[in-house]
Amino acid sequence: MSEEHTHEDGTTHNHEGGNEPHTHDAPADASTEAPTTPQLGVNDLKLMANIIEVVSNRGAIKANEMAAVGNLYNNLMNFLIANGAVQAPEAQVAEDAPVGEDTNEEIAEEGNKDA
Image (tube, rainbow, N blue to C red; front, side):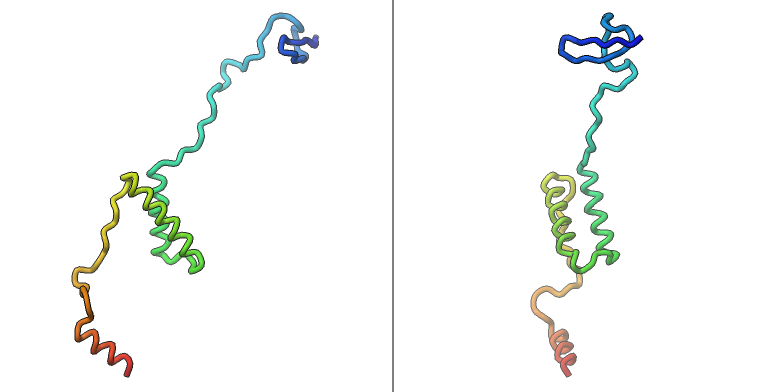
């Protein structure tokens, strides 16, 4: 038979045994650990930057989205570089790229385009 009883903390409830000594602890097989919170690590951020590079190379970003995606990518890369997770990219210039002013050939070609 179920009997109502009151505990020292003022809580009242019913169960078999009434005021006989008992506990209201969780069963031994119940997990008492707090649930783990999701983690986000440097490798996840590196993967995000890589995904942005891939989709931008594939042309999957619309023109009106480019600035926001570019800012996110720059923030990710600045964070990763500052934390030593990646090396700062070196400027990529073709070895045969002219440096300085236009050559005479380039000037002549530009002149022919106007004609």
